[in-house]
Image: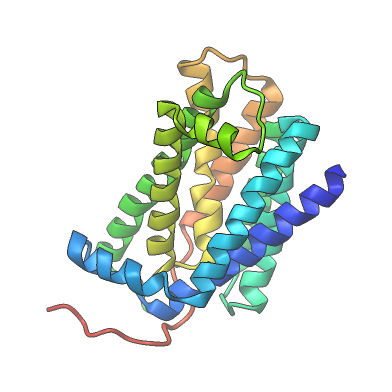
Length: 120
Length: 140
């Protein structure tokens, strides 16, 4: 049960953040931070199916996280999020075609290890 | 790859601070509102929990977190944003130590050190390694 929930959380978070990143890359850099312009961006983005799917998946991941907290300790639940760092970095390289150099790999690995230690 | 302008670096720093701040404060207010409560998933119970001002504030901050992170992703790589915004874990530990007077073990401090080192490493890499697919008109 615990591991099934961890699998749901990691899969849903990873898919959601990849889709979000893809949609935002496609949109291009937001330059105008005035409220009217931001409202326009928002109304456009929330008609984008990648954004809608990613918000739905984040909700799934959040509910699964709450469910996990009801059957496991926080010190088990948090390292599960560290797992998604590594998975997402791999997918960012192969799916989003980001260039992940040695520094970035090392950094992502250090962060994942650190999150793991914090949760112990 | 052209170096990102000083303007883009500054914009990234400011927005990263918003993302991290909203995340940390959002989690703190949620935990203040949810502490010592038994969670039930009936609509009435959910509404009752949402009525708590700390929970409302927490949810509002997490919405700000989601939207500001989307904005950051509009020009920065996912493999940059993810590690860099994880400095939030470090701030949460320090916040717990300073304001909630929590005990922080040596192992936890080691974790804080590793995350900080990872963030510093990734923070020095280029913000964006993929060309945008659609170029918007440059603001004058």
